[in-house]
Image (cartoon, rainbow, N blue to C red; front, side):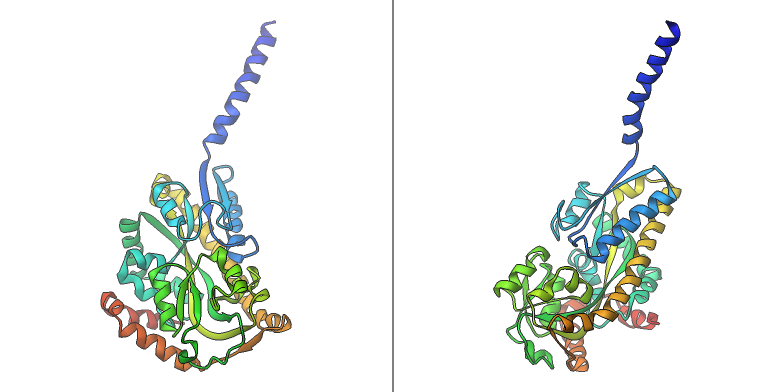
Length: 329
């Protein structure tokens, strides 16, 4: 009888202990506006798997894609309020909070994915990370290659120089840095959430959108557009960010595992994006889109002149453009 009672007590305790163990896991809600087929979303799963491999059973990474938890632009606020732990943070959103770093959003500055990483790991990158941590309450873990942004037009148009984009309603994310880039390209920038872009192109609310080619494919924008113009106007990167509240609670080993997992996920993303960009020009032609190459030198000169002649450049840290250019491989 005593043996039965002891066994029952142990069994009962085991049931009570199970939820406690589960609750002890470190929850990381990882949110993004990108769709499931997008490489950035897939990279989030790589992060989750890698972190589980590094530290089995320690973390509970919950992935929310397609803006299902927070819409584009709201995810940073969610991190700062503690309603989510991780997201992708653009340099454009950083620049909105810290105007001096709008230099990092300038067209035709970064050359490739390695250039971003070299910058982030440099003294300049450390200065950026320190400012972002102190002023925005988030920690930057790594920069993932978003791709080289191209123009994607609803109708076929002869686009050779920025003058040819006059009056074109070009969708841009709704931040000041993005809208400024749209103006620098010569277009009429129109803010619109990512989730509304497909319908906006379909109905004519916007005339064009700009994104890297893998995003055009993943979001199926090729179904409602007729032309891609290869301006190569921005080699774009997205930072994997975690809020300070979560980061500061981790011990040194846990922090190292999270950072390594972020880097592994970016490695996956970067390699796959370059592969995708290489094949997609032919894919879009097969889908019936016209693919054109404008006078890229004319675009580069117009964009850089627009930035350097603006008040924005007055906020830029002295010498940063030259130093970043020197980091290119």
